[in-house]
Image (cartoon, helix red, strand yellow):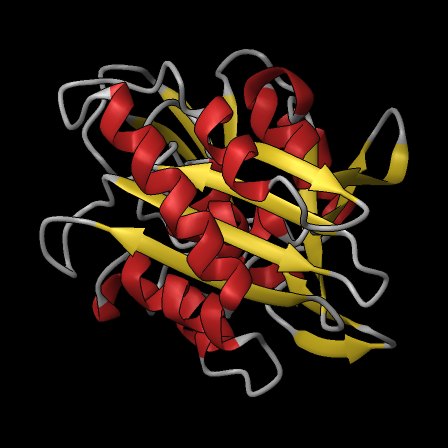
Length: 251
């Protein structure tokens, strides 16, 4: 339950609020997560006045403001087609109009296609805090321990590498359902290849990150050897993860 609504005019002002522990204060982007019913009393910091919704190319990266909406990013002509597809499958059109990019992957679980694709591309987050000032973090670092890593910190932007090729494959009961298993493979001009799997757990997992793609099917199977839940058995996910990884590599 939201007990206090705050709309700072500067990033410094926002950071002053985020260091508070009583009430616990959270960043609100589009509000699609924090507006859900909850018994916890908390304050929210609205980022709308901070100008964090711009998208611009800087060198070989696309710098995406943390408050930019999923729909705005999906309409950007420079992003990888597979990333655009993952965004459009992430949620409905109406929610994409308001959900922020940072809020979406921070709230994501292991079935988030968006988080999986961004993790595969090893995107960099621009983060600010009162203690450390400006710093850069990898998405993998943040997803592993979100509550601790991001306490009193504000994500201001993400950098999506444009020279990286991305392929994404998913299995679900219907195209609009949550994925049972998905694979995202990113490949750099140097040959570096990174495989991320999703469909279960608290966050997508990096199954392989190496200088070239050999062994990708085995890496996928090994990463999901204990990935069973009420949606699918571990054996099924192992088989499908290997198959999807090979399909992605073929793309």
